[in-house]
Image 1 (cartoon, helix red, strand yellow):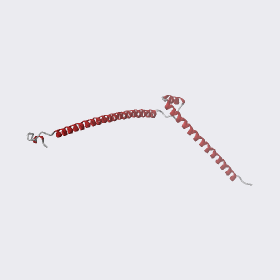
Image 2: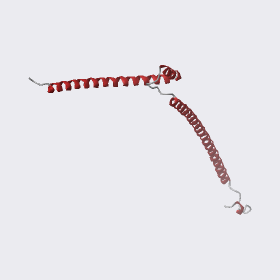
Image 3: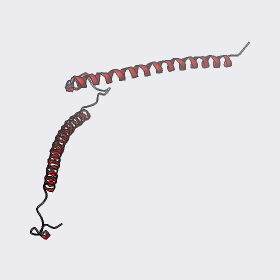
Image 4: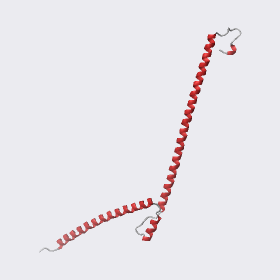
Length: 157
């Protein structure tokens, strides 16, 4: 119903029952608007809370990434330093070995080099033991072969 199309002069005044009903509808609509405003406020607070959590999480992730990138850079620098250090060789003089040892600046690097040297020493000792056993077997085999050849070549009476 269009408000301009209502002819007020021809209508009778509204009944009190209708006015009460309209007032109740207005109060009901006002209450619904108030409830919706409260829901909107609660939703905005929730959204703000989630946004804050998201931003905090994002900042933590950015900090983690920066920390990890620093660690990567330090490790790459350490790798580059290790690659430029001269390798120990078996032909070095005692003075050259002393210079290389003095070039090791951290306890971790020294421990690593010591572990490497001990491992190499153990491997060399194992290889030497294996070679000694092979040499002993070869000597015995040759001695037996020589004895067999002597037996074959010696005339029997």
